[in-house]
Length: 135
Image (tube, rainbow, N blue to C red):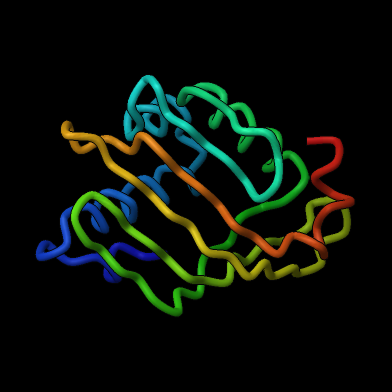
């Protein structure tokens, strides 16, 4: 997702775009600042994680197997304190350099301070499960 996707008319979408930019750069100290201390983070049917550090640790593990190369955003909706993004997430498998695309829908809920306090990720990760098993 690029910063061009979000506009100043959609301030929460802009925050999500900024977070993704930091995530793609693996700037983990900056990454955790986008989240409330009581973040609820859940990927598909996996058990939920709690707190920004757990989300950081999970994603840092994923990125030992996959290199995130960007999103193809199909739609983005912002209303009240919620941002929903429908996309294809693109990765390169580090072990062999192959391309893999993960259809996905992310839901972000923000607290009164403008921090993400809930992040739910609904991926079709069937083609990357073998790479994430050890993450």
